[in-house]
Image 1 (spheres, rainbow, N blue to C red):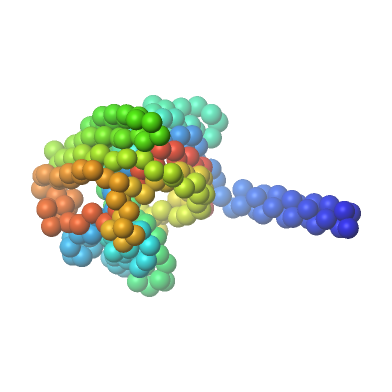
Image 2: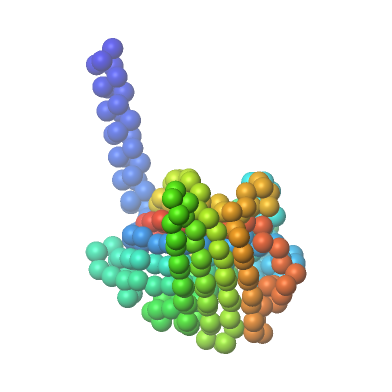
Length: 259
């Protein structure tokens, strides 16, 4: 019995090693994001405003269920603590702050569903236009205050992103932390500027859904979102948008690969 179990375990390990080796041959690692702190804001905007971000052959594809159901535009505020190249050197300046704009989308020909990077701002100029050819170099700042009273922890964040074209996005959010959920991910992220281009993300994250209109969770005491300027983002975020969900992510790490 013990010998059979050992043989089975050894077989599983060898199979996993073989699969990893196969993936390594087929893919090229490009970066190691060691640690980030993130805040996700899932929005429902006018369908035409979300579609305006996408290239031909792709259509908006909101989640059909779950905490982010009906969200068709996603703002990802990133506070990068450390990013490394594959040989362990700092990625660009090593740290960075970014605003990344995603649209959940679907290829109308193949039916493939994917989040698509449609715009963004990088505080580190070396991060623009980025691998997705979608980022502008600009100011991205965050002020974060966390207070503890017994077991409860309250957080106040103020984010500002100002692109090279003068367009701005501001987010102010205050919430009480809950018990987050840890998960791993393996996903493809496409580029709106070059739809055939994608990167593969594999990693781990800790997610605290502090608000979701679909599940009834709401530990957000205040939130204000505003976009200004003449771009697509200000046309989408014009006061008619609905905040579907907010995720606080105190920890995120990943390895990035090219196919």
